[in-house]
Image (tube, rainbow, N blue to C red):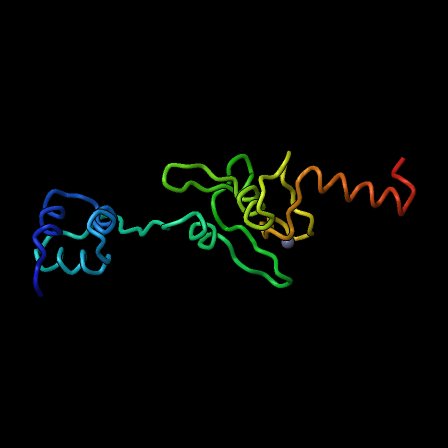
Length: 144
Ligand SMILES: [Zn+2]
């Protein structure tokens, strides 16, 4: 294969593969093939980072029956959370924003019975909870 000088140079400088991909806009496979052609040792970790928060979200969620999404990613203080390009994202807030096109007010909590569900349509913020509570109050005559 034809070895690209720019890739070879970065590989020899010890630049991680993913950075080379980003910097030179080449596919991971191209970098890998170049590395092999040069006889350089394989990197200790070869982890392709998600390109967008949406990718990160998709990577860490598992669809379950009924349109729910189970979070399989990291937690911070027991709250679904991920880091993307140095930024911290609270999953429920992000998912809520994608679903409703606005930032949530107050805490975002799931409204369904699925533990750890982060599906946008299952999430509610404070005004939505208050609205639901006032509906229940109207129907059942209040909790007190
Ligand atoms: Zn749900």
